[in-house]
Image 1 (cartoon, chains in turn blue, orange):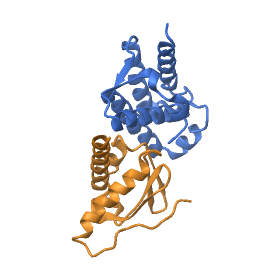
Image 2: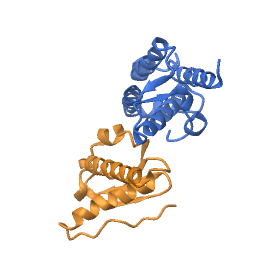
Image 3: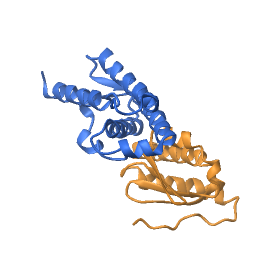
Image 4: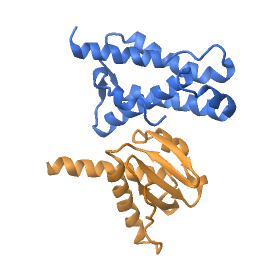
Length: 131
Length: 108
């Protein structure tokens, strides 16, 4: 396995880890939009395990799905949002996932790329911003 | 290369125009400036903002509201050129409007 392939596999695994199920202690009705958005991302990763890259359209769809879900969670119950937004929670993972996807999608947008290889994701740089 | 730079400038102008439209149009921009990673915008009428269009634009990494100022996070490589492009677009409008070009706030 080449180093590029290893980096790509590592980044794919990171995406799948961040797109985790909401905590079972959080109200299911409230977390449902986030659970659905994360499930779609994990399903894509599972269905395309051999893909070395992801399309710009897919990245935008992931980002929009997460934005819709996270906006709903924030507006429906601000108290729950604040409580679960702590570092290390499932919601923190979703926010970081959204940030990472937004940054790589923007890179593809500005560079007019139809797809991005997973090994090109600058996770150390983009995982922590805009959340 | 000149061709590439021109293409990049055109793209910045295109994105600036799209963002200004999403923010309610040129007449709705009361102030627009930038810091390292963000465009800072104050609008005349917040109800004219198409928040979904702003949020979903691929150049916008995130949004924050600080008082009356909307911060659009666009990244360090895009903030300054996008701000310039926005002012080019707003200046074109200024020909038909007596209002001065909105500028002003400094980054913290």
